[in-house]
Length: 176
Length: 219
Image 1 (cartoon, rainbow over the protein chains, first blue to last red):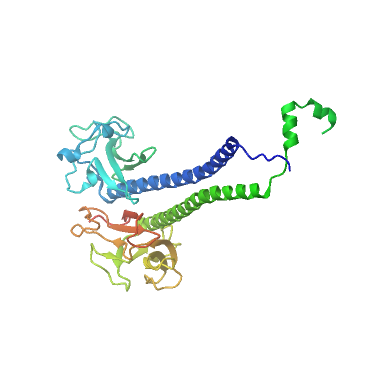
Image 2 (spheres, each protein chain N blue to C red):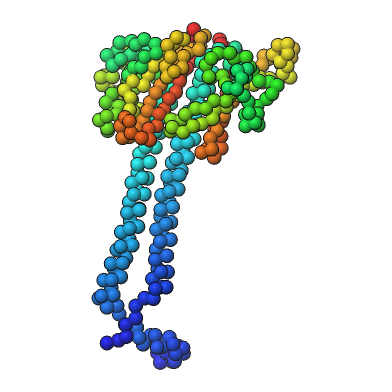
């Protein structure tokens, strides 16, 4: 009988490591698919929250499209809010006094996925032409069209790679 | 391997080559047994990963379906002048109460009305995919608002865990805790919880939205 020689322990371990790497690569493919699905759910949830908020402004008249910035702690504009490019300290349309939470600058909303999202709403006056002045009345200057309101809705969450943004312009035309 | 080539091999390798034999049956069986144990433990991980992936995918499909159904409904109602929320039998409900059916009349100029005045019904009916769930259907008629029992209805979403997704808020009767602001357009409040595993199961996807009837009047 010829001399018997089995695999050495090292050989066996190397073979197992190679096999494990192969299988882990397969599992990583699954988990990245799962992560992608979850991310899509977060973005879609944030988008729904933004849509719903924008729709509430679409339902009211032009004069009612404004923020409530004078209700104390609930209406605080923190650094995240004021640090957004849509924020303007001078052109903000304020004066909402309804008890409805829709016109709060920052709200916390629960998305369809059950996760918590931060909803920031910016409403600013804009001029197609001319320069905006807000005192004594909001105007773009003599001979220029009336100002419009620009509503920007930003939904933030740590589980979103970037905030979800939606913007729309509101005018008095045609009937409201 | 010729004798010249053999002579070129170092002594150690030559000794090795001489000692090479086939595997014995015992060696083969032991190796196969070890491989089987390793593969079995890893395959259980793969199987559960596949199951989770399929489950997540199905859930996501149901969510996407609910969102696209909602998008179609939104598009249609944006063009409607008014909408009524009714029960299954077609009886109008009071503001603030949830119903299983809405009826809207679309003017012929709407993109989804096909050039005629169209009576559109959106309603829920028992799901054929999960007996404890409901599906959302759209059915139209050119004569009068049809009931959900009408033929020719088309399914737009499934796996809803409520049969009454529609609610019309007024300035004094809230839907989902929210009143309609005074002087605003008519608004329809929609609650569509989607869950593949039926009501009460975890991982529900709760689609909630408000639709303003842009063609309505401010009251």
